[in-house]
Length: 248
Ligand SMILES: [Zn+2]
Ligand SMILES: [Zn+2]
Image 1: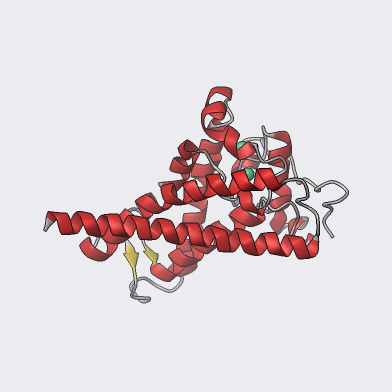
Image 2: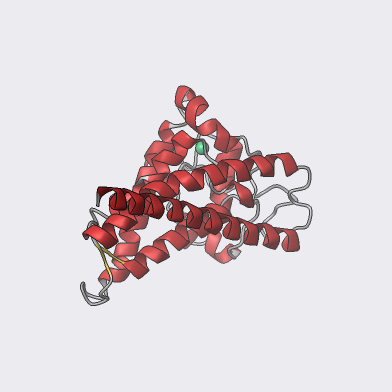
């Protein structure tokens, strides 16, 4: 009985790791291909760096997948978590609100842990791997040292115990997380100028914002929103990708 349960938990953790790895390869692969079509040669000379990014990212996929797999097992087998699948269990307005709550909570956690990892000692231990991408490519989305991957891997599995969310809304949160993680590193801006440079862009993080973090290090720490950067005076505005990488 206990052996069966342990086997089921292990299977769920391994299956989830495989799903995260495949999701990474598909998302980064798609955006690397889009980059090739749109800006051929943008990653020229970065073959070695991209191989390292893929290696670290696949390792991270297993670190992300393990806690998610255990929690997914607990949700299904033991009724753990506050994930619900009846769409009417909460009012419909709660659906978008729950998505925003998850993104805001993740953003807050990311801002402060990321900022802490820029202290020199922690930087060397946990965060230098991510900044070894100079400049990052679409493959750098999960290019983290295992210590950093661990700080990211526990966020959503912890939140599902605290904030109720419909399983479809959770899927949307994970999609936003995946797509923005890739897009923010790919070296060009996919969103239109009116959005990035307009009122919404003043609060939302896209590639132009995170590119500046990779250029200057001690600024633009946020994940989805510029709220914490602006509040704490660490926002240094948008990067422009230089001449070759200019926003169209
Ligand atoms: Zn980054
Ligand atoms: Zn950083």
